[in-house]
Length: 318
Image (cartoon, rainbow, N blue to C red):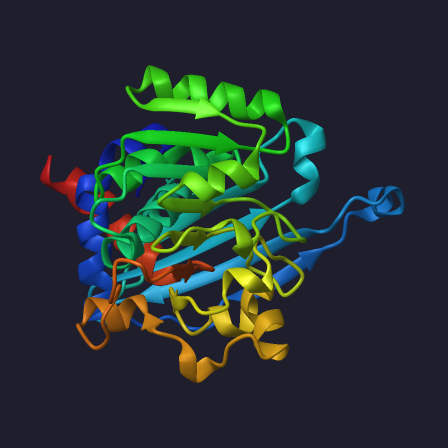
């Protein structure tokens, strides 16, 4: 069995190849059983208000080819510990024999496939002339978004907002070192109003983005909410917008969708479709330049499998 650390995973997953691989993966499909969500109590720390550890167990396979099993641990209390909020690992197996082929550092893989899925959605939903990107959040996924979006749109200016101003400033400096025209902002409303694409990658439980701020023709990307208790945008952000989800699982998992649907903001029948439907040409993405679009993702084990296979096959070909 081979081992791939974070650096090896990142090197094998440039967005220029990962985004097209995801497009092909969604078009082809694979077997993706429902993820299992486990809550691991914080023990004595719970009395101090420390939230539980959420563990997601995510399998996916292609019959006769590959089988991936990923475990993701999400710990919202890690910010106070000076640690990333997400840690993950993935095992890739031969789907015929069950033989383990590789262990892969899953946090880097998850972050890169998550950013790539947002870019894939934007390839159908964001205007082709989108040049101004606003990133909300300053974590691992947020840091990858400019590079991912630049693989599908001519991004020229990147602005970042985060609850901690120093984190936003540090991320903007990192992007400038990577060659982006990037700045941090303390005025989220003004930055959202000026952006062609607004991409949120937070663990927020209350809206941080307001629909009233978003301009006609803009694209809103919502990454962070993966439980009914989480949401990054208010109801107005969805009203009148063309809404796409990564998979139907998002409708049952994300407070971003459950709440507005329960309040009658939009119905399931009004959803534009899923990434698979877009990849197969079953539905159209953006229909007008002035149309406002929203993409909501909760992540899919299909994305993990596609990314893991790319890491494995690039190594095997080397």
